[in-house]
Image (cartoon, rainbow, N blue to C red; front, side):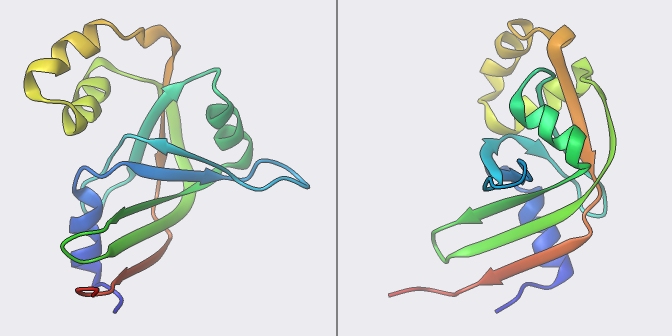
Length: 140
């Protein structure tokens, strides 16, 4: 069953690893890679990456991307979102801290942030435009 807007936004706001997909050129399948991201219901999706990475170059060139998040238990549920890039720029200390804090234990965030080079990170913002979602209920 498709999820309501409120349920899919709440699910996306949880700290899942996202699969990011972006066009990678004629004759090629989309580049699909895992990313950490940040999202609050009603807002933009943010992810950060090395500014010289393949995904950064492709997202900047394409001007849009999609992400997919899922869980497999207690029920299989997914949310897929596509939209345009509405902003990008150097990653701030606040962005790095907030995003890494969604995925790392609290006592590991500071060390991770201190060991990261903010000079090479870029943050992309995407405005959700098209949504697909489902909860297949208990399987089995």
